[in-house]
Length: 261
Image (cartoon, one colour):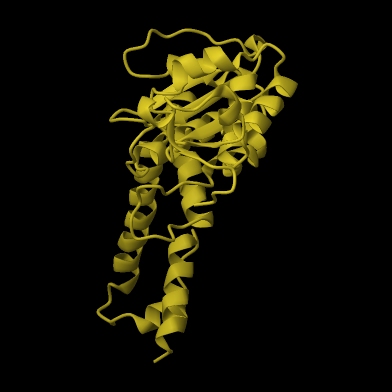
């Protein structure tokens, strides 16, 4: 009998392949005359169940492509990128890049970014719960002091910038929404996905707001993040942004400049 590690590798390779399993592999399975049939059932379950997990994570992509096309793509993805974790909660993190590399999908250039939005939704849903920033934490600070502090976004936050109107595409494909045609001429969109409380929120924001949040997420001070936001969007209004988002759950912690944890 082959070493266990070698047998396991043969078995995994067989699951991922569309070709018949090798005779070497079948010879290692209990010989009852049904080795091939039982292996094919296992392989089919492997592809179908993991494909179903992808469909659960990417319902808009499935709707945009159609069930049959999505099934074919999901099967190819499962074979190229099998799960590496026992839990399938976040399986499919490379699906957006996979879609972007499929030549037959080049006529749907927005598809990969819509997939990134959908993955962000699921990741935000499963993110850690943390206490959000309260007014008492900033009440005694002057505007000058705020400039040199770090403002930590909620750990569920994901920022996505696209050349295509992915927010409108995503919204139009939610349950209960009326069908409408989205024109790519609408231009790009900036989207923040976050779960500050119970529900995941998908927000379309200005380029300046996205740049500000991304800079804060990279650990830059409020002053530096504001400078980068204005460079991206001259109309970015920090006071208006804070009036809307400072205490709505977008942020969880205010840190001194020298603090790293």
